[in-house]
Amino acid sequence: MLDDGQVEEELIPHCDPQPRADLPVGLGSPQVARHIGDHLAGGQLPPPLAAEEARAGDRGHAGCRETQGSDPAHRRPLSYRGVPFPARIILSGACRASLGFVVRASGRRRIRAEARTTNGSPLDASPFFCDYLIRADSRDSWPIPGGCSVEIKLKYGLNPHQKFARLVIEREPSPLKIHNGTPGYINLLDLLGAWQLARELKQATGLPGAASFKHVSPAGAAVAKPLDEGFRVSQFIPEGEDLSPVATAYARARGADRLCSFGDIAAVSDVVDASLARLIAREVSDGLIAPGYEPEALEILKAKQGGRYLAVEIDPAYEPPELEYRDAFGFRLEQTRNTAKITRDLLRNVVSAKKDIPEDAARSLLVCSVALKYTQSNSVGLAYDGQVIGMGAGQQSRVHCTRLACGKADKWLLQQHPRVLDLKFKKGLGRPEKTNIVDAYLLWDELAAAERHWLLDQLDAAPEPLSRQEREEWVARFDGIACSSDAFFPFRDSIDRLSRTNVQYVMQPGGSARDDLVTEAADQYGMVMIHSGLRLFLH
Image (cartoon, rainbow, N blue to C red; front, side, top):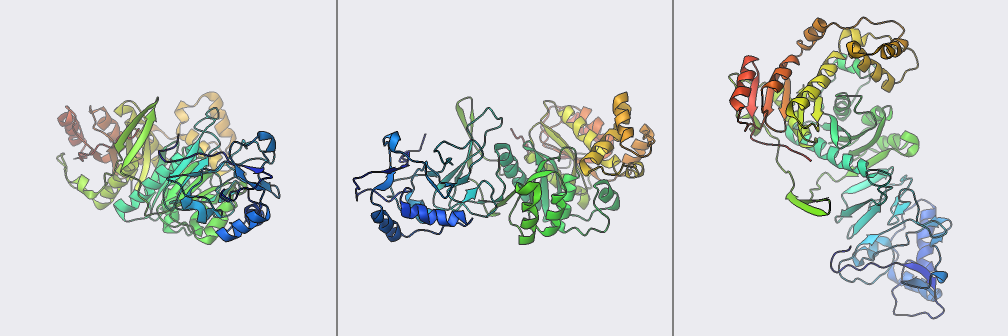
């Protein structure tokens, strides 16, 4: 259903032997078709077509124009040299200059395009192109025109049986530019969530930020800092490779949990350079969003996934409206969006006996809290040296979030153990396979016989498992691990679990009836406990 003042018309090219001069020139005008077709056939964006040219062309072929409700027997598919044209248009006076054809402006209207095959039937695949600007191969960087709303038809919704899905952009001009690839419904959710996270990391810390998103929650997030040797080796980054700051930010974000980042959507706060593009090119990743791309970086990414890799640019100055909307079972919910800023002011209310918060720990608390803002609740996260190392997302109980986050953090710490770095992988294994092997090795005591057999079959030499004491001693070497929670801890059980992962700094909103007991537990372990007063639920 359209808003008040909008008129939807089904426009199909039709030949009428009785021309009428009072009708506007439409998409079916042969002059317009030639103008658009000649440019699209060469992979170029057609420039605006002057009204005089369009009218002159229409007079030359006076019997052909767009009509509504004509006899279907007289309708013809709209194509030119095998290039289908959008056949369903909601005309917009504000768009006529951008789109290259002349219409009458009448109230608030939108423009929408649907791809058609040469026999006039809708395409089943992703949009062939939209508004003559976004083609399915997306090898050309064509911005969406300003002055109108654009609705991009998607392949399907969350699942294939949810047939109807679209992206609506109501912005003048559009803040999004799709340089390459065709986004899907979940891709877009991840792109927009990841961008907000990466952008706010830089706002909170002043350093380039990056996020690795999967299924609308971050698998990892980090700010740019030099990579230490153990982490570099654990991430299979070649020795001597000189990564730029924005590339190190993404390497650290993806390195939080390589298993979860498999096939991720990445986001960075800064312009993508060739260093980052080369790093992403060798990983299994589905897309990237950033405020800009250097030409060399874009060419590298366009070659990924057979030319299908999703490269999206967003205007860094874009801010959405204050209100956001959500439909649930036919009911619409409205609220002001979460514009809370994660700043050092949140660290002021230290309620524990121990008060000191070093600079590195403060940065880690901010990074972790920004990540929680864009993580499905309930959520608890752990961070170290400005990098999320464990995220427990979407659990119904707080302690399960904590156990999940700590388990991931333990693996992150242990993957840098000398015995792990010395695993003898068989030749020919890729990064994903090596990641799975490391994960299985660190779960040695939990493996069934068949799993151990598979693990040993991937290695040239049988490794010695890490004992419980060796694991605990290694984890204790890391000083400054921080934890943030999107809501209060109702019991001390989460604090007890955090202590086993050597967490020393904890930030939570506070507000539980048992706050005193939780703080007492923190004091027993020598932790710094902060009450931020800010809940960060996301659903």
